[in-house]
Length: 460
Image (cartoon, rainbow, N blue to C red; front, top):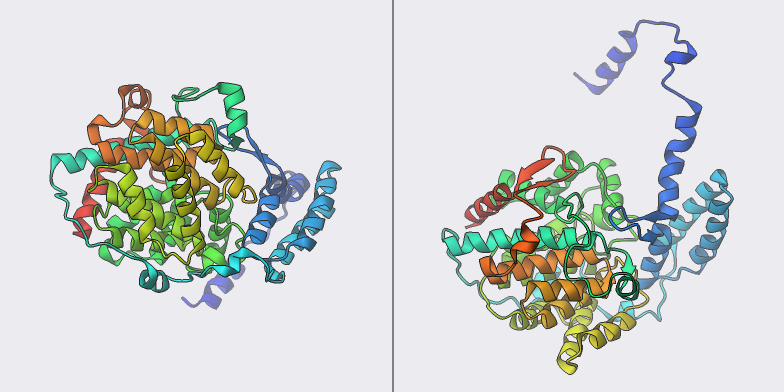
């Protein structure tokens, strides 16, 4: 049937009836409060796993300034917005919010910003030409050793994410004052978070699409399988539902496009391309452009490279140096991770290095890719392949702890295999996990491992 025929049929097939107030599906409270409750979360919210406070809209303004734009008008509106929020002025808060996002989309370029001194990478083709990919190293994907590395990679990520969930959103100082040096779960671990959500959807898409996997297919599975997103992913899914597909879905009206959301899902791309850094990076780019742009995507590429190398190298410091050397030197992301690496080599005290890095990137949001990438470098370098110590440093650093500890936990898990993670971490998790992914609400870790191995066979 033609669309006009369907619409006409719906209209003409309806039988007229009188609906009384008790049957009405339109209630004043629902209509007035639905969007308002969602708006209030943008202004003030807390992380569900830790209770840490945040303000997404302030982060949006902050992020756009980080990307070289003048945000003076938006910053003035922020102050007005908080006043409207405090007095519960619904109508004014809606107007101010709209004005802020307008200014963020139509602001003027700040020619003095350091952002413009680095190359902007808009596509995989541009990135590929500038990156320094090493030759592929063969891995026996049918061996028991490989399967164990995959298993302990996932366990490292699941344990690391569950460990960090109780700490995300707090500063290192606040964590130390409240809990001291944390090197184990503060409360019974929960796998119900977003640290593997998007990676499971990536695996499902790769299983369905095979070597023909592309960002469009990943995006369509996002809207089908993921009920909600946060920051960059939330904007991306709204774009997708309006028919705005990748790469536009990642950068159109998306002030969070260089935050950590893509960086937190890079490890899976390395696990399906072990020793094949080029393929891992390309898959990460395809996945990253659904919700991110430029340095946001490079963050996912970086973690995919680290994980891919962990299958074929045996020294974490060597892995870090090789991974950073692959990135284009004219990207700002390269500057960030190379700065962190240079400080690691300069000082023996990891707390001092963390202090230097966090000061260097203090103007970036706690969920921006940059300061968290620096934390990853420091935790991996000084953790020296020891899972407990790597987790301790990742926790002590603060910021977006769960995203960081999940990714570096995966890398260390792959690196060491069955000898890398103690039973004290694994036993409280058990053999199954719970997620909020539609159709994958409960699944076993063995099942995820099997999917990952199958994906390797598909790509090889």
